[in-house]
Image (cartoon, rainbow, N blue to C red; front, side, top):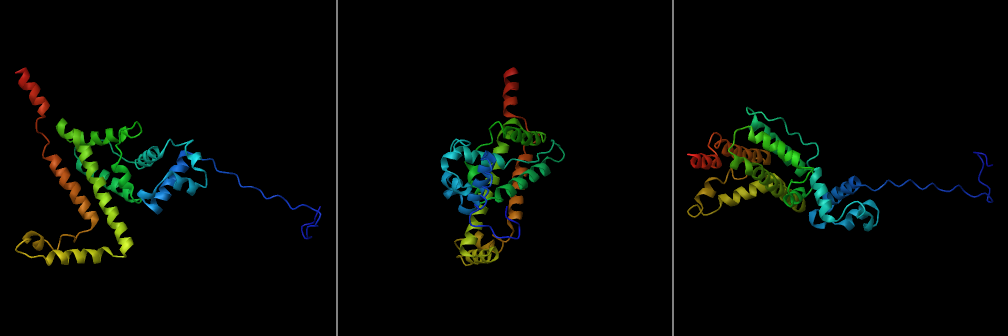
Length: 250
């Protein structure tokens, strides 16, 4: 046996290198890798082949755990809901609760590149996601909205959130590609509006100094507030379905 401070004799075989144990492939690892590819390549270049390359496995290995790309996108969509905190309905604080929900949703969408593109193509009506829809409707329902307004309120809110985040993500990507700062872009757009012929575009010229003056946080919150005020205007109104029943009974 060779001593620790002695060289290895040429007739002794060097010890075999230990092959590191492979980490088992799971759905969770595949989704993690898909997010990595999404952040690096964007939605349009996300593919099963790219995900397999990220994991260092053959594409066929993915299909043992994920049926196809559509299911992978669904799993990525499902993950955006993990950890969502939808509180118990409080009729006195329903607007604040919905605002918190909307801010949380936007933050999650912006945490990954092009995530809004994935959410726009899916609906949260799977068994895993229906509980979140139920809780949000409970918060909105506690406000006393008529049934027909309540039925579309959640979808209307999510459409606004997804659309805002999608546009925001597209502009952020454009900043990175053109090396243009938000402040520079804002000034250029405002100057453009101010230079328009005032006789043809009086409103754009009048609002030129503030058209893009506020932060995205402010613009997002204001948009949600406009929706909330619109919903609040329906509180106490009779539901058309109930009115129809009363007239039939009468």
